[in-house]
Length: 351
Image (cartoon, rainbow, N blue to C red; front, side, top):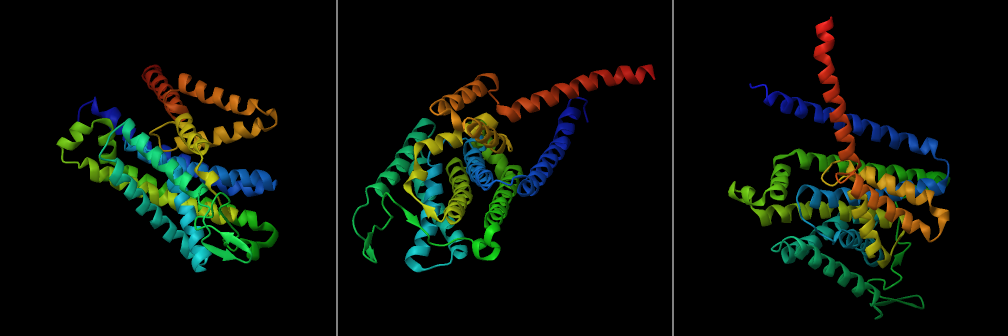
């Protein structure tokens, strides 16, 4: 073994320990939050942040690790939520069996998008996925034809501009009564943890290596036998499953789903959170979501300056930390290790 290969091997051994330490910190924080946060409003914001972090982690899997610049993430999220709600409304399903079926429906929807878009590359994928997402939004909000009567009211097939409401919940209201929000928080936390664990396994697996190769050097990856279209279609479907599942959980938590969830502002927030945290880093979407949510909450009373403040934070992060907060943290840790390694020989010599 050469001396030059030693630092690389040491870095590979250190990486899992850093991820494990971060995972333990996140788990401890998630467990402690219900005991520390007494405000129902703040706990609701934490739940919303977990939804955003889940979606951002899957967009990061698509773009940060596989290089697929899709803008259909919120459309897939909304499709999963709508599919779950419609199964409950039209077929009388309980919310729990409807959740995985809604996630599978989101995968089918994503594969149709992928078949149409992934033959293209770069900005063309972004534009076509955005067009599909906006078309889905317009189809829902312009749906005014009566599908069936509910009492004296007419209901559209997609719910129209109003959407669906009160079609079912997790059952925590009946089980925990006044503490139902804590029960919902626990369920959404498990969803987030499950999503992150599966994503970590994918990223560290051989197929995850193929995804990164297609992003970093697609010509070399294809020359080594990686099928670009099949691999990108696979990551598109995997990301859609967890995104659609989160959409179903979102609908169940709020007991409502409406076309507002498909708005461009929601998508831009997800992208901004990933950029601020660090694109292509595993923990970046979570860190970026927390930072932007905290900043947004701190500026809640500033009126029209709220959006301006968020814009300045995002701009500063892009200029000062192009690799995101996690990337800058990695730079600081690397610098500290080099300083320590430089001092270690002199200390041992004096001894």
